[in-house]
Length: 272
Image 1 (tube, helix red, strand yellow):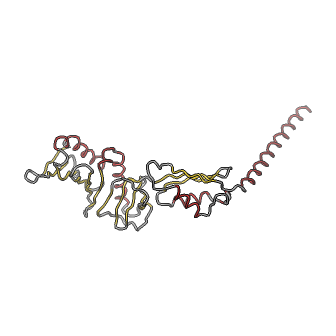
Image 2 (image 1 turned 60 degrees about the vertical axis):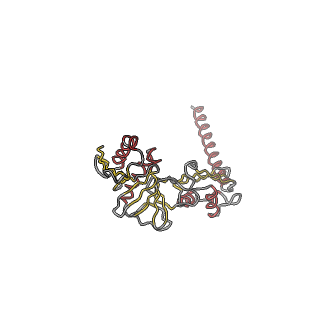
Image 3 (image 1 turned 180 degrees about the vertical axis):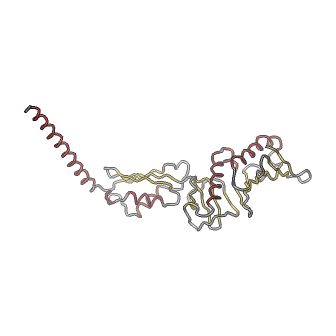
């Protein structure tokens, strides 16, 4: 019995000693890490192969503006959450992740916004990304996405960034249209410009061919573009790219085409 008591007492003292050691070592580690200075800043723009809106030099400049200096600033004085918020408020940064290790290295990872449409308004140009977030163009890089011009029913002040507060339904329809174009290889290569007339109808200007695609209101992209793809697959091979002046997708189950030659019958209705 006495032996068991001694064994239990020994284990208790051992566990108590280990616990005290870990507590002491943790406190010592925190005390030492509080003295660690920022020795290096490592910045990674994760999607720079696709978009180049944000440069490493720009991020370095923003960090310096916050008073963070290599070999001078202590890591414990750097508010990581606040720094992330500052970076996230930059024009084309979608998300930033900032952390540091015990060796004095500050790690900054940047994810850029990916545009699907570009709007040219009276107050400047703006991109719309895949989450319907609007942000102004940047001088350092141009994303080759469809350009929307004409009577754009959005009120955007110069330098605006954020989601649309007015005409949200229209903006969401345009986003759906842009995403559909973006995901279709042929459409992505073919659609260059989208003009909006004073009635709110969309007119698509393609890269190949002299025709204009009358899209109508920014709805039903799947149904409308299926008709356009049927036209490209079945009519263009026989008629050529320049026979028709306009191709209208506005009407259900048919495409209305206007021929370029005025001496012949102008309109053809093709049932789809």
